[in-house]
Length: 434
Image (cartoon, rainbow, N blue to C red; front, side, top):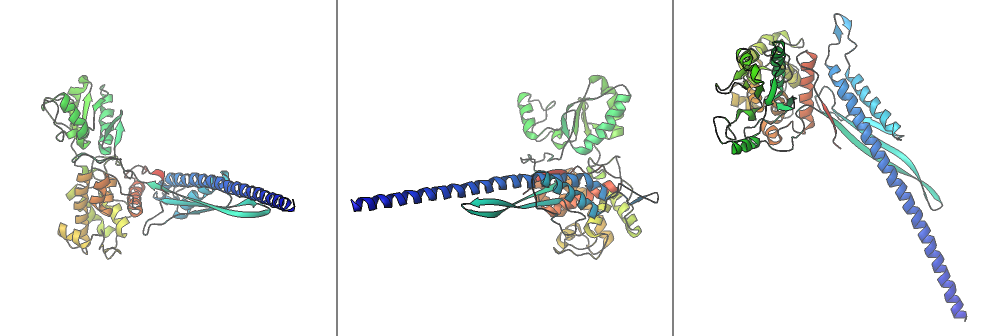
């Protein structure tokens, strides 16, 4: 009986021990659950804060490039770099705290040589009290998020275009896609047509080769439907316009807006015929070259104007690009071996047949190369990205590659053009990247 009592006592001790262990485990799991719940809440706060900071920076970004003074008076629209960062920091910190965060750190990852950051990082590190058994401990929960401003053309379209198809970016008019510079020119054409009593209807615009293949399969007559790969609609420059009552007016007036009637038997089909290098491709307000910005040194003004005229590239675009590349320093050398005022690699300069240490020759070579890139990609943002990151990287995705340096480079040049009055404010997109 004594042995039985001992066994019963041991069993009781074991059961009590198991119960205590279960209670302790439950407390630990409860603490972990609280910690995980807190981590989820802090991550949400960090995500929302990073997005808020980036959106505030997007709205403030164009103000970096407007003149500091207008007619001798301080321009309230101008924003210094410190003010730009303060706007982003204030927005991010405020949103994080409104979402329950207590310890918030806002930083701006830099790209060497860039005028202003395009990324904002928000880190939230909060102490979370957790009770484990009789002990009360503090767990530190850390969450982090990074949001980025992405210049137009910086988002991968998600599918490789067919060879020869215009890869984007696109503008839309009446629900139809077209190249951005075509959209600007169409607006002017439509305004004039409407004033003359002929408001225009866009029947068709950009068509990919895949879409053209379906049309040709349904109507295999090459006089009326071009075979896939041969239709000019794949270039983003062509518009089929209506109504029929406007055909006569279009035939007489479309040329004033650089639209060409492509085929004598199609009174509705007009293509934008202006050399793409002679406009800002969707960002300009006129159809030709542009005046030089004030930041161009006088010694280079005539050289830039001459190169712009020779290669049909916007002089303002060339000037803004040189400013971003070297600050007009003909002796500049990058850590990657790029040389001179336009920062050419020696191999690239040799391919175009000039010495990159010669500023006049480099500016002419820059204009030549930009003309080629504009013709290839049909878009200023993509052409600039190709100049910075290489055409192969741009062609691979049909977008501005996701390299922080390249995106900052494109955004800065578009901002400089806006500040010079040459384009509208760059349409930067906000997206979480981490």
